[in-house]
Length: 436
Image (cartoon, rainbow, N blue to C red; front, side, top):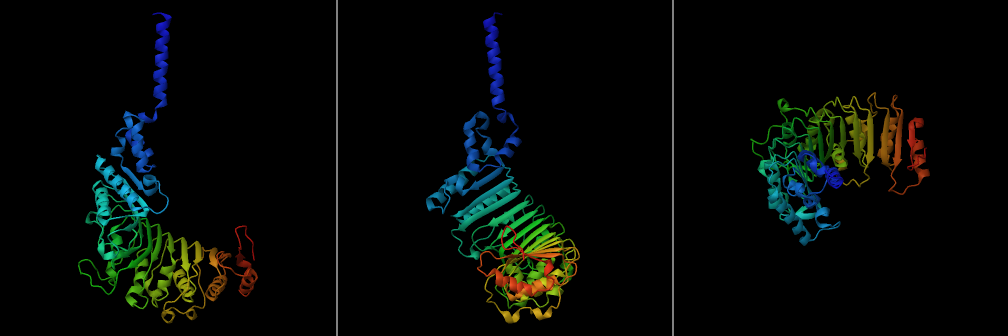
C-alpha cells in the first residue's frame, strides 16, 4: 500500500470522525431528544425536521405539545381573526400528523386569541385519549359561549386517571362539573370558574392533590336545585374529610350573596377541607366573604401544619375580626404576610363582624415577624397593628406603605406614633429601607 492510499484512508477516517462528532445530538435516544424539544414551542419543534433524516419525523411522535400564539403567528398584541384561523389550522394539522398516541403534556397558551367551544373540546378529548398528564389551556375567549351555561367540559376529562396537572383559564365563566375524580392529580389551577356546591367534597376524589389555586372563582347559585345523586348533605359531619397531601393553596373565591347565610358559610366549610395545608393564601374576595359569617369561630377547624399565611385585606373594620378568628386556628404559624387591597367597600356593613367583639389577638408562639404591605393608615389598619403589637412574644412588624397612594409620610408617622411598643415597628418607605 503506497503512501497516497494510506493518506486517503487517513483523511476519510478523520472526515468520518469529524462528521460523527459534529452530530452527536442526532445520535441521542428519542426519549432524550423529546426532553430537549419539550422546552420549545411546538412550531419550532416541527421546523427541526429540516435538520436531517434523523429529525424528519421525530416531531410526529413528540409527547410534549406546547402551542402558543406568539410563536405561531409572531403577533405580540391582539390576534386578528385571520391569525386565529392560522393558529387553529396549525394545531389541527399537527394533531392529525401526531401518529404517536402518547401525550404527556398538552399546553395551549393563547391569551389574545378566541376559539369555538367545539375546538377546545376536541383538543381536550385528544389529550385525554393520549393519556395526558399535564393539561394547560389558557385562551382569551370562547367565541360561541358568551354565557357559562353554554359550555361544558368534555365528559372524558371528568375522571381522567392519568392527569397530574390541570390548568384552565378559558376567558369565560366556566361552570366546573359537579362530579370529577382525578386519582393522580397533584396540581389544580382554575381561573374564572363557577364551582358546584359540592366542589370541596369532590376535591376529596383527588387524594394526591398538593397544590390548589382558585382565582376569581364563584360558588354556584345556592338557590338552584340540584339532584340528590350529585349533591351530598354538606352539613352531615360523617362526610367531612381533608386533603391530606395538600402543601400549597391559593383561594380566591368570589360571591355576591353576602346576605345569604348558606353561601356565606360555604367558604369556611371549604377551608376545613384544606386544614392540612402548609402554605395558604386567602385573597381579598375570600377574606371579605368571611366578614359576613357570624359563626366563623364555630365553622373553622385547626390547621395543624400551616407555616406560612398570606391574607389580602380591605378597608373595613371586619378585617380585624377575621384576622383574630383565623389566628386562633393556626397554632404552628411561622410567617404572616398581610397585603391591603385598598378598594372601596360598598357591601352591607350592617351584616359584618364588628371589631368591638375583639379585645386582643392571640398569636402563635413561633410567629416572630409580621409583614404588612400597601399600608395607608386607615383606622382598621391602625387598630389591627395595635392589637398585634401588644403580643409579648412578637419581635417585629415590618410595614410597607402603599407606593401607589399619595400620602404625607410625616402624617403617617404621626398616626403610627400613637401605637404601643413602637420598638417592634419598622416602617419602610422605599426599597432602600428607610425606617421609622
